[in-house]
Image (cartoon, rainbow, N blue to C red):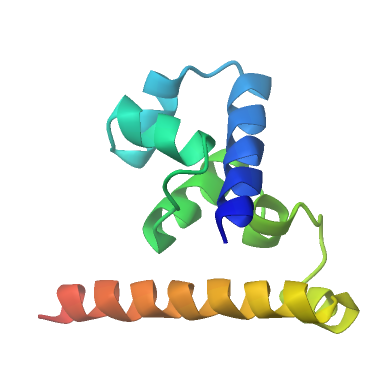
Length: 110
Protein backbone atom coordinates (compact mmCIF):
# COMPACT_ATOMS: atom_id res chain seq x y z
CA UNK A 1 0.00 0.00 0.00
CA UNK A 2 2.84 2.39 0.79
CA UNK A 3 4.20 1.90 -2.73
CA UNK A 4 0.74 2.71 -4.11
CA UNK A 5 0.68 5.97 -2.17
CA UNK A 6 4.12 6.87 -3.53
CA UNK A 7 3.03 6.13 -7.10
CA UNK A 8 -0.12 8.20 -6.76
CA UNK A 9 1.77 10.99 -5.03
CA UNK A 10 4.33 10.99 -7.82
CA UNK A 11 1.56 11.38 -10.38
CA UNK A 12 0.03 14.24 -8.38
CA UNK A 13 3.43 15.96 -8.23
CA UNK A 14 4.03 15.46 -11.95
CA UNK A 15 0.60 16.83 -12.84
CA UNK A 16 1.07 19.81 -10.54
CA UNK A 17 4.43 20.67 -12.06
CA UNK A 18 3.22 20.03 -15.60
CA UNK A 19 0.46 22.59 -15.03
CA UNK A 20 2.86 25.09 -13.44
CA UNK A 21 1.20 24.95 -10.04
CA UNK A 22 2.91 25.37 -6.68
CA UNK A 23 2.05 23.22 -3.70
CA UNK A 24 0.24 26.28 -2.31
CA UNK A 25 -1.87 26.49 -5.49
CA UNK A 26 -2.85 22.83 -5.22
CA UNK A 27 -3.53 23.24 -1.50
CA UNK A 28 -6.09 25.92 -2.40
CA UNK A 29 -7.77 23.56 -4.88
CA UNK A 30 -8.16 20.89 -2.18
CA UNK A 31 -8.74 23.33 0.69
CA UNK A 32 -5.86 21.83 2.70
CA UNK A 33 -2.54 23.23 3.86
CA UNK A 34 0.72 22.88 1.93
CA UNK A 35 1.95 20.25 4.38
CA UNK A 36 -0.87 17.95 3.27
CA UNK A 37 0.15 18.37 -0.38
CA UNK A 38 3.76 17.56 0.50
CA UNK A 39 2.65 14.43 2.37
CA UNK A 40 0.44 13.33 -0.54
CA UNK A 41 3.24 13.85 -3.07
CA UNK A 42 5.71 11.96 -0.89
CA UNK A 43 3.37 9.01 -0.34
CA UNK A 44 2.95 9.65 3.37
CA UNK A 45 -0.76 10.48 3.14
CA UNK A 46 -3.50 9.19 0.92
CA UNK A 47 -6.25 11.13 -0.81
CA UNK A 48 -9.72 11.29 0.69
CA UNK A 49 -12.50 10.49 -1.76
CA UNK A 50 -13.54 14.14 -1.97
CA UNK A 51 -9.93 15.19 -2.61
CA UNK A 52 -9.60 12.61 -5.35
CA UNK A 53 -12.77 13.93 -6.98
CA UNK A 54 -11.51 17.52 -6.75
CA UNK A 55 -8.14 16.62 -8.28
CA UNK A 56 -9.76 14.68 -11.11
CA UNK A 57 -12.04 17.60 -11.86
CA UNK A 58 -9.20 20.12 -11.64
CA UNK A 59 -6.84 18.10 -13.86
CA UNK A 60 -9.74 16.98 -16.11
CA UNK A 61 -8.99 13.29 -15.87
CA UNK A 62 -10.63 10.13 -14.61
CA UNK A 63 -9.85 8.58 -11.26
CA UNK A 64 -8.47 5.53 -13.12
CA UNK A 65 -5.94 7.79 -14.83
CA UNK A 66 -4.88 9.40 -11.58
CA UNK A 67 -4.87 6.28 -9.41
CA UNK A 68 -3.64 3.71 -11.90
CA UNK A 69 -2.03 5.75 -14.71
CA UNK A 70 -4.32 3.91 -17.11
CA UNK A 71 -5.92 6.33 -19.53
CA UNK A 72 -9.42 5.31 -20.47
CA UNK A 73 -9.18 1.85 -18.93
CA UNK A 74 -12.11 1.23 -16.60
CA UNK A 75 -11.44 -0.55 -13.33
CA UNK A 76 -13.06 -3.76 -14.62
CA UNK A 77 -10.51 -4.04 -17.43
CA UNK A 78 -7.69 -3.42 -14.99
CA UNK A 79 -8.97 -6.13 -12.66
CA UNK A 80 -9.29 -8.71 -15.44
CA UNK A 81 -5.79 -7.95 -16.72
CA UNK A 82 -4.14 -7.68 -13.32
CA UNK A 83 -2.17 -10.27 -11.44
CA UNK A 84 -3.39 -11.42 -8.03
CA UNK A 85 -1.39 -8.87 -6.01
CA UNK A 86 -2.49 -5.96 -8.17
CA UNK A 87 -6.10 -7.11 -8.03
CA UNK A 88 -5.91 -7.19 -4.23
CA UNK A 89 -4.50 -3.63 -4.16
CA UNK A 90 -7.30 -2.42 -6.43
CA UNK A 91 -9.92 -4.08 -4.24
CA UNK A 92 -8.42 -2.49 -1.12
CA UNK A 93 -8.53 0.94 -2.78
CA UNK A 94 -12.15 0.44 -3.77
CA UNK A 95 -13.07 -0.66 -0.25
CA UNK A 96 -11.40 2.44 1.23
CA UNK A 97 -13.14 4.68 -1.30
CA UNK A 98 -16.55 3.22 -0.43
CA UNK A 99 -15.85 3.55 3.28
CA UNK A 100 -14.96 7.22 2.72
CA UNK A 101 -18.08 7.65 0.59
CA UNK A 102 -20.35 6.15 3.24
CA UNK A 103 -18.75 8.34 5.91
CA UNK A 104 -19.22 11.53 3.87
CA UNK A 105 -22.78 10.54 2.95
CA UNK A 106 -23.64 9.95 6.61
CA UNK A 107 -22.22 13.35 7.53
CA UNK A 108 -24.28 15.06 4.84
CA UNK A 109 -27.46 13.23 5.80
CA UNK A 110 -27.12 13.89 9.52
